[in-house]
Amino acid sequence: MLKSIATTAALLVVHANAACECGYKTNTGQTWQYSVETDFSKLNTLEWAATTDWAISNLVRQATVDLNYTTNNVAVSNGKLQLLCSAYNATTDSSIRSGQIRTTRQDILYGSFRASYSVMALSPGSVAGFFFYANDTQEIDIEIQSKMNNQTVHLGNQPTQSTDVYLPNKGVVTGMHDYRFDWLKTETKFYLDSVPAGGFTKDTPVVDGTISFNMWGNGGSFSGPQTPTTDNVMSISKIALYFNTSDSTESAKWEKACKAVKKRPVCVVDRVGLSTNTTAPATGGGSAGTSGGHSSKSKGRKGKGRLSWGGLRKILPVGVAAAAYHV
Ligand SMILES: *[C@@H]1O[C@H](CO)[C@@H](O)[C@H](O)[C@H]1NC(C)=O
Ligand SMILES: *[C@@H]1O[C@H](CO)[C@@H](O)[C@H](O)[C@H]1NC(C)=O
Ligand SMILES: *[C@@H]1O[C@H](CO)[C@@H](O)[C@H](O)[C@H]1NC(C)=O
Ligand SMILES: *[C@@H]1O[C@H](CO)[C@@H](O)[C@H](O)[C@H]1NC(C)=O
Ligand SMILES: *[C@@H]1O[C@H](CO)[C@@H](O)[C@H](O)[C@H]1NC(C)=O
Ligand SMILES: *[C@@H]1O[C@H](CO)[C@@H](O)[C@H](O)[C@H]1NC(C)=O
Image (tube, rainbow, N blue to C red; front, top):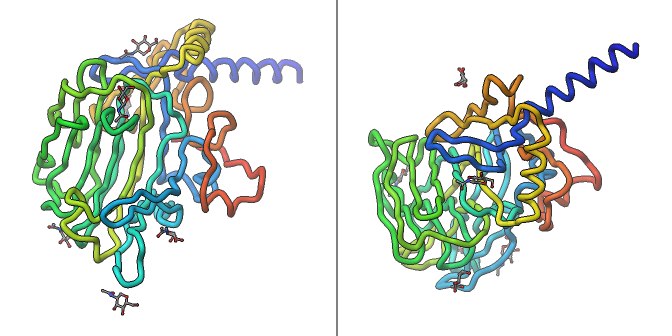
C-alpha cells in the first residue's frame, strides 16, 4: 500500500517534470515562457464558459454605424468558436452586433501567435481580426475583409505598415487555414498555412498588451463600403499562443520554477504553422503539454482571470469546474 502511494507520487513528479517549465521553443529559434492553447474541437460549452484564459467583450464603440461587441455573438458550437457579425437593418438596428474575445492576460510582450480558422461572409461590411493590441499605435493585425475577394489577407503593424497578400495555393478564406504572426523585438513576421508571408520592422510594438479575435463591422471604409446584409461568421478551431511576460515578478517566478526542475524541459513547437504537436524533448521524460508548469490550456484553472465574463458565464452554476482537458 505504502509502496503504491510512493510510486504514484513518483509518477506525479515525472509528470510535473514533463510540463513545459522552461518554455516553448519554436521552429524559428525563439523560446517563449508561457502558452495559452485552446482547442475548441475538444472543449464543450461548459468548459469554454469556465475558462479564465479568455474574456468576451461587451462594449459599444461609436462609429459611422456603432460597433456593438455583444456576448450574444460569441459561442462555441460544432467544435469551433463562432464569432458573429450580424446582418444589419438600418430600420431596426442601432448598431452592428459583433463578436470579440481577448486574452485575460494583458502582460504579453513579444511572442508567436497561431490560430486555425475560416471566415464565411456572404456580404461585404465585416472584418475578421486576429491581432495584438495595446493601443492604436501599438498593434499587429491579421485581418480578412469581407469586401475583398475571399483570397487576400490584410497584414499590418499599425498605424502605417500594411499589405494585402494572397493565401498560398489559391486558398480561399472560407476554408480552414493556419494564420500565424511572430512579434519580435525589432520586427513582425507573418505566416499563412506555414508559408512565410512577409513582415514589417517599422511600427513594431514595444509595449505589452493582449491578443484578440473578432468579427466586426462599423460602416466605415475599412469594413465597408456598406453594412453587412448577412450574418458573417469567423469559425476558430484552435488557438496556440506562446509569449513572454512584461511582468518582472512573474518572470522571476518563471525562472525559479524552471531552475527547480532537474531536466529543464523546453517544449518544442515543431510545426511552422499552428502547433498541433507540442512535444517535450527526449530528455524531458514523458509527454508534454499536459497540466502544470506555465502551460494554460483553457481548463478553467483559477488565477489569472481578471475580467468578468458576459452571457456565457451566467448560465453556469457558481463554482462549476471544467473537466480535465487535454490538447
Ligand atoms: C523570453 O524570456 C526568456 C526568459 O527571460 C528568455 O530566455 C528568452 O530569450 C525570451 N525570448 C525572446 C524571444 O526574447
Ligand atoms: C428591416 O426591418 C424592417 C422592419 O422590421 C423590415 O420591414 C425590412 O424588410 C427589413 N429589411 C431587410 C433588408 O430585412
Ligand atoms: C448591443 O447588442 C445587444 C445585444 O443584441 C443589445 O441588447 C443592445 O441594445 C445593443 N446596443 C446598442 C447600442 O445597439
Ligand atoms: C466569398 O465566398 C462566399 C461563399 O462562397 C460567397 O458567397 C461570397 O460572395 C464571396 N465573397 C466575395 C467578395 O467574393
Ligand atoms: C500607445 O502607447 C505608446 C507606448 O506606451 C505611447 O507612446 C503612445 O503615445 C500610445 N499611443 C496612443 C494612440 O495612445
Ligand atoms: C510530433 O513530434 C514528434 C517529435 O518531433 C514526432 O515524433 C511525432 O511524429 C509528431 N507527431 C505528429 C502527429 O506530428
